Length: 251
Image 1 (cartoon, rainbow, N blue to C red):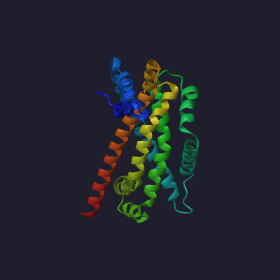
Image 2 (image 1 turned 180 degrees about the horizontal axis):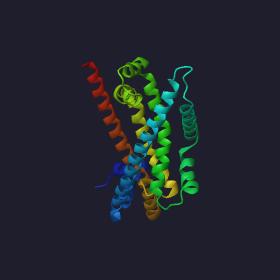
Image 3 (image 1 turned 180 degrees about the vertical axis):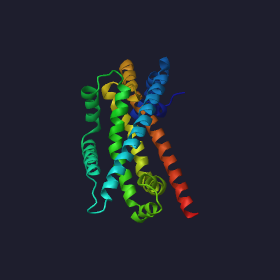
Image 4 (image 1 turned 135 degrees about the vertical axis):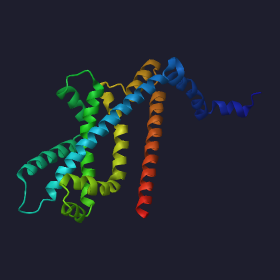
């Protein structure tokens, strides 16, 4: 039986607002199986993230090795070709790191590409962007390894590539892991930017659902929660890997 207190509680603005959220979230997530659209967008988000981080790693490792090899040349024994490639790599990292990712995505979509496959455009744009940052992360890790390690490998008859592969890079990996984890998290969240060119990821579907229900708050909060859950999962996995590497150092 209602009492003055319960009447006041139900009409208290915060409680009244919370009671009104249930139907709004139902309309934005359950009604008409709209949850399937979030899953579809999440799948595209993963596609873009995986493709972009793969391209970024390939570009970043290549650029980092070129720049490290150039910086470690002995005075008087400079390779002109390596110097030219190093200059190109420096221009690449400077331009990409000095311009906003949103602008880069728009340039790739409206200036470079003429395709309706917006997901492919997003993969390429974000992969090239990630490559510039990853190259600096890897280069910092490579430079942090004692040069004597590289010299020891070369003295054993290993080529430069084999020395980097078997000696330097495994040691540098432990140093760059935290920064690489942060880059992956940032890349995963920044996939929302490809919504600007019409790629159908989570933000795209959240906007569509908001347009159908005339209520944008619930779908935006839903995708924010999805991003948060996966970022927390990635952070947890990164922490586990770091702890395992530290344990291997003590053995």
